[in-house]
Length: 144
Image (tube, rainbow, N blue to C red; front, side, top):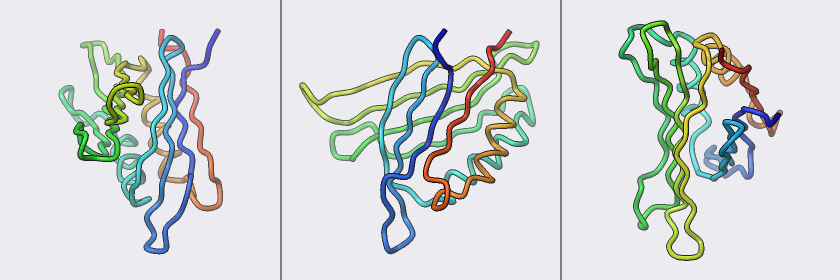
């Protein structure tokens, strides 16, 4: 059986403190990877929001980098949401290379998971030292 996971990897650091990271994920059927440029605090903020997710049935926690447009480097959306009244949740993964023709890569799928898994992902993202530990991989237990 294939893994269900999300992985963040430091690819490069800039003098101004920004970083280039690669994000790879799989729901055991679909997988994708894309890279982007960001400030490390952006991932920590996403993690902080996930730690206390959900505050309400309709709450969504979103990490977004870039815009879906050929004028932008890439687009990545990670969206945590509750999809049923009994508390089932998912992490939507949407990635677009924003390239054209033979270089085009677009992915959109969900990783079904328990709320507790998203809370744990959030805690581990907050604790991740991106410079010391270049790779952070979180494996989701099978949602039942």
